[in-house]
Length: 337
Ligand code: NAD
Image (cartoon, rainbow, N blue to C red; front, top):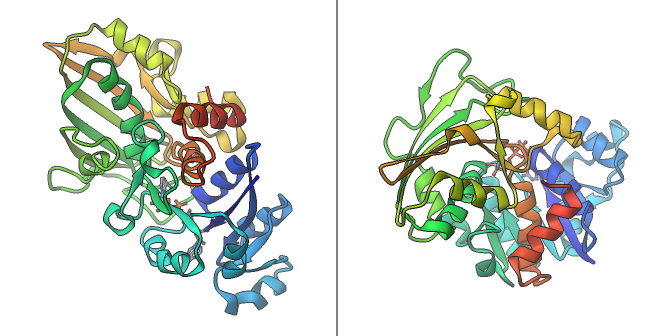
């Protein structure tokens, strides 16, 4: 049983903690918070040992009546690996601490690939992280792209990808993010960073992306145009995506015609936090025109990267050599379709 710490118990961190707890071969030995807020209180109520990232704030936790088990350094001493889920940029700064403490670490997509040196996706390059000390699970958008492009590449080869990424303005709880009433080219320059990020896990793929921010918090949405190496028909693509774990074909004709309806479907699945770990692809959108595949998909940004974090733990701690076996274990424990 391997011991996992989560540094930064926010949107991603609390989900990673629950996903790790659901596995049979690993356990959470602690989670960290900077502030004695409701998430800190609920982490303790759930039974997680809570460690504080800023030792000077011990009194604040005491005053709030939230029990702490020590400092982050003390948490790291007990861990085989830490999953760093702190906000963008902080993870890379924490890397020095992890090196000093001799603890392996997984970072999130907000960190730059170059600062960590290795990026991870369960389907594209699992074995490259086997036994490694530091890796970064690529962002929610890049994970979404990889989940569908990798099986398509395996099926018929990809010559070139173009994708238009429609990005949510903020997560549902982020009251300070936007836009409220605008479509924002983000960035206004072309290409966006998503294409280069995909190349950190799907090596050599030819891809260009453009991105827009829109006033929604539910999900990202992607529109893909894929020039194929070898001709295939739509039914072969559908069959391939259908058999691919963590990808779902959904039908607008069955009332799942928008990100709002996908989230309603996720609620019906009855999972904690209404998460949708899978990447839904609109079946009707799949079409091949002049050797080019078109399709549309969505990404539940708060949860799609969570199973990848679990697989990254197995790879880096050499718990499972075969990516498909790790994917199957993670999926079974998390009830992933
Ligand atoms: P978040 O703000 O929801 O959570 C971050 C947590 O870290 C908070 O609880 C915060 O209090 C805590 N924290 C802040 N500074 C800290 C420090 N110095 N030490 C320890 N904890 C600290 O952020 P998030 O959305 O969970 O994002 C975390 C990472 O995951 C980022 O790299 C982000 O880019 C990436 N990511 C986010 C999403 C998303 O949609 N939210 C999706 C995929 C990847």
